[in-house]
Image (cartoon, rainbow, N blue to C red; front, side, top):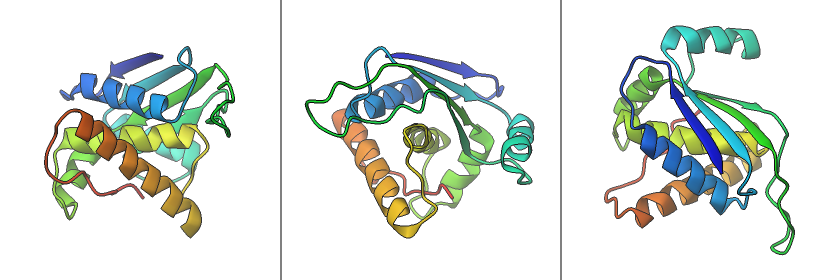
Length: 165
């Protein structure tokens, strides 16, 4: 799995954790090991510009996903996953910090960035949360991935609750 993390935000983030949870999520979703992903960490101004340009929505957001090859997890266990470019995930640590502080389970900016990374990966894989059934599926899968990753690392305490809109 080729995953690049590029921090352009000027804010110190746990890039290794972002890389590790992205790799864990992609492996768990059975994405081809030679697939490629890019994670870019930007400041609020850059995120706001992307949010306006691509979503026509004001203000910065927490995470945006830009799929490339529209890869999907294999439907069957014996099916060979396709290889390709997943795309880009863009994260904003300033928004993540606020969301972590405001969440019912209060958590750190880095914990929120880990959650947002998984959220972005799932969007790249075609998951969405516009409809209630889609939201239940995506957020359930997101929680399972974050909990699994945290469990493998012996991290204690509650996992961040979904704060992604």
